[in-house]
Amino acid sequence: MHFALTEEQAAIQETALSFAKERIAPYADEWDERKHFPVDVIRETAQLGMGAIYVPAEKGGSGLTRLDGALIFEALAYGCPAISAYISIHNMVAWMVGRYGTEEQIAAWMPKLASMEWLSSYCLTEPGAGSDAANISTRAERQGDYYILNGTKQFISGAGVSDFYFVFARTGGEGAHGISAFVVFKDTPGLSFGANERKMGWNAQPTAQVIMENVKVPAFHLVGGVEGQGFKFAMSGLDGGRINIGACSLGPAWAALDKAREYMFQRKAFGRNIADFQALQFKIADMATDLEAARLMIYRAADALDRADPQASMYSAMAKRYATDLGFEIVNQALQIHGGYGYLRDYGLEKLVRDLRVHQILEGTNEIMRVVISRKVLGGNRG
Ligand SMILES: Cc1cc2nc3c(=O)[nH]c(=O)nc-3n(C[C@H](O)[C@H](O)[C@H](O)COP(=O)(O)OP(=O)(O)OC[C@H]3O[C@@H](n4cnc5c(N)ncnc54)[C@H](O)[C@@H]3O)c2cc1C
Image (cartoon, rainbow, N blue to C red; front, side):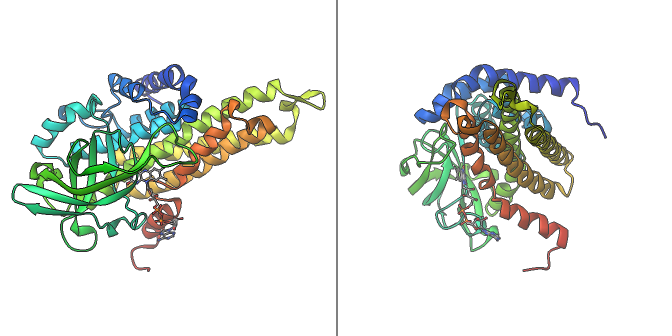
């Protein structure tokens, strides 16, 4: 067991961190305030190989590992979690195309996904089916060489801006086995979008409904060319997605810890630097320890997925739950160390608290992570 990054991993981390510090962090507060989605900056990451990170090179991706991916998302999130998280969702879609698409689909779609000429969205959640994702009601009916899609997807990251929508729809009966996956392009007649949701955080990327009214797509857009496989694609995509969203909580916790440390040597109270107070020294010690523990869990889960460990889903769920809970707690404590100033927008901490709150909810809520973990620990025979 090795607990140090290889030279190559350290270089990947350094590249992503430099990009985050130069191209993301200086603008992140402004993007949040203006609700601006910086697609130009996002597309720049493709030039660094971050458009299809863990898609094999022979399929048109960067051929890196899940662990490399986690390092990248952690580092990008040091600059802004909302931007890193969107890039992670795009990568989840690119991976599903690479893993489950037919040769012809990969040839047709991967080049523009990897270059981010096409930005993508993952469309699973519906107004009536969130945690209970196997219960979706969007339907796809076969008509000759086409499918006709009808239904509404809720809370879709990137909706209205993304070009490539990876949509889960029901082609068969009830339950997981009746679900298939389709690709729908933005300009398809019948596809429309709801208003951009007004959110607590993640303001640097849009979230909206994706509405399908008699959307006609060629049968070629059925991912993998077979019906009934969609739920499997969705869940295996999420195993990686959960690691990535956990990594997106590590970066901001790291940034917040850096900010809090710096502030403790600047701010004086009772005639001393606040760094002199043991209560705050202990707080910093706990934050650093929690960050390290969360980081180890994310890296370990990513490694398990790379090795196709049969327990990888459980490790992903554990790491997602832990890193998103602890990441939120760390940025909140960093805000506390800043006193009243932490509550002001200028210090950048309240944004991190607002941004990280949603990581405990999406890609499966942290309650659902406990469902996944307890199923593994207790076996399949409970209600
Ligand atoms: C900003 C944002 C971006 C998002 N982006 C996307 C996206 O790009 N694509 C996408 O498909 N989805 C996206 N989502 C949707 C997200 O994944 C869902 O919100 C999430 O899965 C929870 O579903 P729900 O909101 O319907 O909550 P519900 O499923 O209604 O859950 C309500 C509460 O009940 C709890 N609960 C439910 N079932 C159980 C159970 N069995 N045991 C214990 N507790 C339970 C939940 O944990 C939660 O606390 C996004 C959401 C947000 C807020």
